Length: 196
Image (cartoon, rainbow, N blue to C red):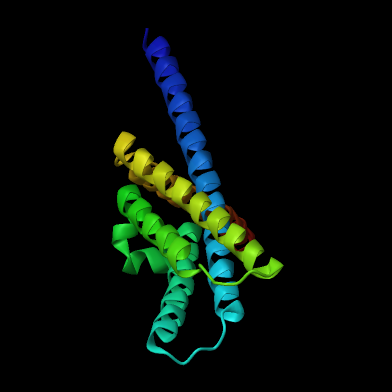
């Protein structure tokens, strides 16, 4: 009877681990796609800066400044999507998928608006197409984040916490094995010295 209960617990834990792995894998895939879309937005803003003619009026200077902000926000998104602990520790609001989705939507709309350049050359036409692709793809990722935040709010934190605990458990287990080996070595040395 007790064996059946333990087997049931083992099966439930295996199922839970499988769900955690699947959810973490989907999250990593979404992170990668979003990082690539953010990179597209950065390139679109950079190309708009390079292609736009150098006018010295106030409107042109403001557009160039906004394009630089678009590049900065794109870099922030790249840092968020790589999920570096040192960056996420200072930007806790990006842990929420809803806030992350809102920020991605802001960046995509900013890219769509500020990278519009006037001109009829092939380069200008391709830049307009490129900006649309970059902004729409990031907007789609934004929608996935908001939808994911609404549907599975808090689940991501549980998965991350579980992964951290599992990593810590493995480290402790490795340390324990190392200490046991060291203990056996010391027992062997003690036996050698006690025989002398």
